[in-house]
Length: 135
Image 1: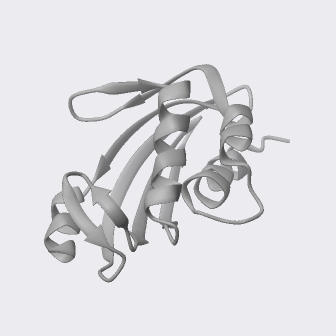
Image 2 (image 1 turned 45 degrees about the vertical axis):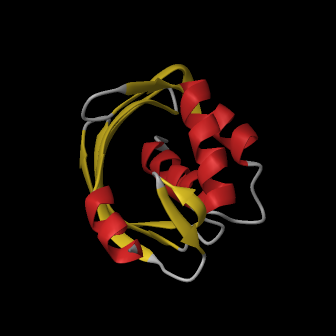
């Protein structure tokens, strides 16, 4: 039985969303393929780089929630439209925050699943809107 959809959901529920029941580095280490690549608009990240970034986000945005709203599957590719929200406390992308203002933005990701792991993701997040909400 193919568990690709469950892998994608675990990525959002156990890795991107802060929760007390997950060791984020360990869980991401299992979910992401060793040769995983995350592609943004102008840069890319390896598995280790993304694990480090998400760990940092967990400490900066302790109530971070990344909730899938829609999932579309085409073979081993999953397009996920989600809502990311949280209340940062500290330097958030160059903006000082004190935990009193929250953001809520749309994100869109395209995940490729191979051998039960996330092999790659192309992603867009509406961080410009988050910065406006946090000012």
